[in-house]
Image (cartoon, rainbow, N blue to C red; front, side):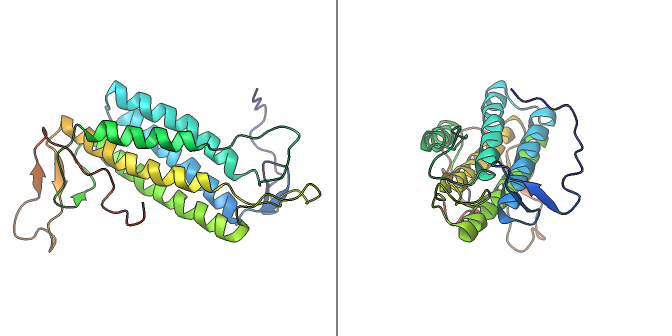
Length: 227
């Protein structure tokens, strides 16, 4: 049970904050950056749900993901150790499988892409594209934390704050950004379709919209060269 009785604590006024094991670290710690960016991604998904006029099915998927992202943040703030007094929340491989299944499920409604698309279209799509880019940043921050701390658990006698980072956190965020791209396209099915990128800035013609309807889309974010 979480019991938040007072929001301000003043314990961070020296530029440090507590990790999940109560070890203190600087607020510039890469692990803190990773779970702060994850929190921002979660908040942006909340904006998409609140303001995007999304379908009930998409909202249900995103609400599950919002709960997952709290767990991702909890994982990122808890250094890996050989053993714990209480087993902490950890991202599991099955969660990534769920995201990939979601990608395949929603992709079936979309037509193939032959071009990059501009973020926008419907309000829901625009909000989801912002959530996608924030999630990409969170993923990069998670990889930076892994680069800084590794992925090995600390020994039994290690000090608080020592220990590696679970690499499944970064993999989860990678798949989530792919899904958010797909869901942004799904959100445009209720409008005039995706706005296609035109090389040269579209100076010759008005932006082209691909009409809603048929086909199968690529199962990946065209902006992702590493998924």
